[in-house]
Image (cartoon, rainbow, N blue to C red):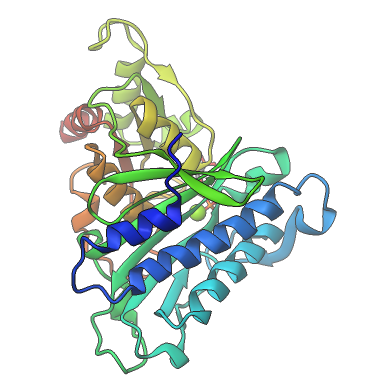
Length: 331
Ligand code: AHM
Ligand code: MG
């Protein structure tokens, strides 16, 4: 493993942006810090009853909040607010965006899912944080506005995730490729472990909640049958893998090649996953790694959001697999 640390890498990358004032680097450092704090808590989840289970509240989407959702949300908000480098944040856990009025001079906003898949924590399954960074469009010096958050994915200046799995990794892009860093928990340092990540153009893994298959569009169920058949491009069934924890499913497929699908269903007519802090950042990463993300027709990165918690159908992974499923949806 390389001895380049995440901190060194961030500073080195900053040199590629000659006009940089270092604010983006500070944002990434804040996320790194909060990620380490959250990782530390997650690793104790089986021991510490006070952080396991439901918090007794619901978020705007009517989903039960876990104690660690709330904890992670607070940690990321605190780390991003205190350094004065972000003027506002939108999070899956909060109905509205949070304006950091004391940071009106900051030029960036962050969108975050602080702990995706958190219902998996109590059963010791990997969870993750997903983040997206954009430059504000409202004037610097004024309070942050909704339009600062409602930007298509192509406007992102950075995006990434932290996976809290058998090890903790932070994977991110600033539009110059994708790099992954693994946390050495003994010394609390992320080291560059996965430089210049690329995803295979073809994969053998499909990931979808097949329990919903009867409630999906015909094209989706036909594609799943194609994956399961002997008459596909492999000449044998693909491997089905679905953890139900987006970051973990995405991370595996990024490394091995595959497709993750969360389509429209009867219960979730516009899909389940949120555009701004789940789909757009992962779309930025997969494109930077040579893959593709779409809503079945259109590029996720070009969708103009109209709502903070907007949901979209999501097809992401190896480029040839996403092309293939789009072909089924066309007919
Ligand atoms: P969450 O943001 O409330 O944690 O929900 C998102 C999660 C994803 O991690 C996962 O891929 C998906 O929901 C699983 O949904 P389902 O149980 O419907 O398959
Ligand atoms: Mg989520």
